[in-house]
Amino acid sequence: LAAEKTLDSGERVWQKMNLRHFETRLDGIAADHAFLPGDDLVKLRWFNRAERASIELIPGGQELMLAGGYIDPPGTQPQS
Image 1 (tube, rainbow, N blue to C red):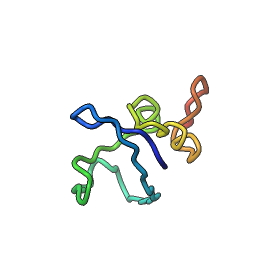
Image 2 (cartoon, rainbow, N blue to C red):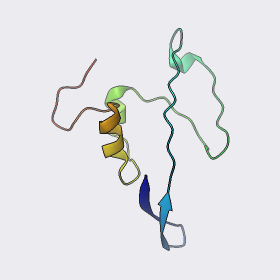
Image 3 (tube, one colour):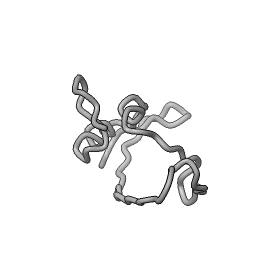
Image 4 (tube, rainbow, N blue to C red):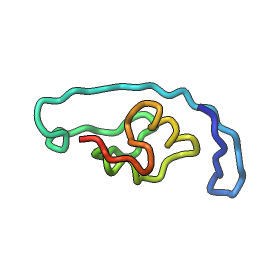
């Protein structure tokens, strides 16, 4: 994935990202498990399917989430 990013200084730079898909299946409710951010992650948060469709994403993020089936196309009935 490649996208333009605006730094805090206002400088616009082109960034290339390598994305990986990791899936974890949990016994029980996800929010009941403790996970700690690491590497380049600062914060972790759980989102249900409906919430994922409304969060602000990086450029190209919505297309990536649609292609992966993680959000529903705009104007469709949300999946269970």
